[in-house]
Length: 379
Image (cartoon, rainbow, N blue to C red; front, top):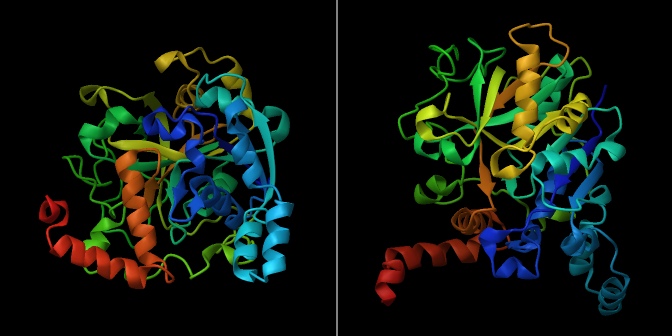
C-alpha cells in the first residue's frame, strides 16, 4: 500500500529554548528565514506525502496559522507589486494539504502519534519530528518509504553517534548481518559481533565515522561546495520524490538496511546495546496504534514510541517473515538538530552559507571573523 500521509508531532513545550519559547513555538523559530517546521513539511512533500497532520497543543496555534493563507498580507504585497515576497508568503500554503489535531497534554511522543489514529486510519504513515532537519540532498525519507514498501512493518531512521551520546537517544539492537547495504560503502558487511554490536557499521570509539551531521566540516575545508538551496529555495512547485518509490519496493540501496530486534530509550552508556541511535524519521504500520494503546508510561512517565516499537520488534523476533517486522535505515548524511541550541546555531550558519542569495556575502564575512580570532579578538 502506497504511503501518502505524514504526521509531524509539534506539541512539545520547547523548554530548552526558554525564554524564547514562552510565547513562540520552538517549531516556529527561524532557520535563516523560514521556521524549522516548514523545512519538515517541505521534506514530506518532496517524498510525495502531501497529506500532512500536525499534532499540536493549545499554545501552538501559530504553527497552524503559518500554513494557512494570510489574505491581508498577500493583498498588501500585491498592491506593492512585490512578487518575490508574495511567493515566499504563499509557498508554505502550497506545500501540502495540512491538517491539525491537538494533543491535550504533553504525554510523550508515543501519545502524540496515537493522537493521529483517527486521521491516519488503517494505513501506513510517516512520522517526522519537527526539530530534526534532513538535508534535501539526502533522500532519507524516500529510502525509508521504499524499505517499508519492500518489507512492510515499521522502518526507523538510525544514525551512529559517539558512545558518550547514546544516553540522549533511543538505541537499537540489530540482527546479525544487514538486509541490504550500500554497494559504494567502504564499511564491512554490517554483521554484528555479538548482541547489538555494530561491527562493520562504523567506529564506536567516540566518533561516528560518518559525514559530519552538521556539515561544518565542509565549511572548515573551504566553504560550501554545492549550494543547498536556490536563491529562493521554497518557490519551486511542490514535487514528488526525486527518486520515486518503486511500487515493488525496490529501494536505491543508498543507505544500509538492518533488522532491529530490540530498542531501549536513553540507556546509560554502559548499558547501550550499540551506538545506533534513533533519529526523528519513522515509517509506521497502522498496527502501531493498538500497541501504543497498551504501552504503559516509560521514561519520564511518558508514553514512548521507542517502547511501542520495541514491543513490535519482540513480537517479530528473528522471523524474517514476521507480519510486522521492524527495520532500520542507517543514515550517513546531513542532519540538523534544531531542538538543541548549539546545533540550531550550527544549522543556521551552514544553511545560510550555502544559500546563493546569502552565502556570497555571509561566508566571506564568516571567514574574516574566524581568521581575526572571532570573539577572542573582541574581548
